[in-house]
Length: 65
Image (cartoon, rainbow, N blue to C red; front, side, top):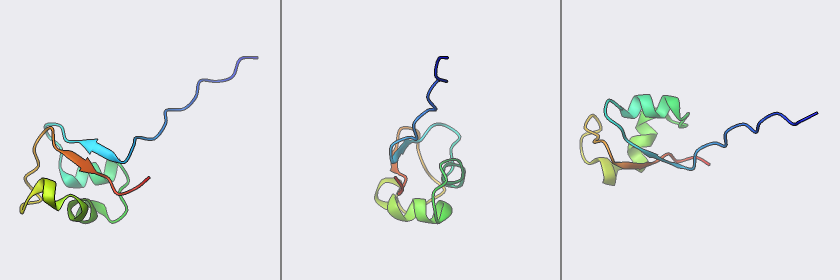
């Protein structure tokens, strides 16, 4: 009997922002421990002073895996 297809591997520890994303949504979807606050903390240099202002194409570190 053939083996079932392999499950998708988890993403590496980075994420590219797309239009409509928020740090909160990304943190929830990617299960970032510490939520959006932690995601912002580890990406402050990329995001800048305003955590509400992220731009498509920014590469964020997720802080896990």
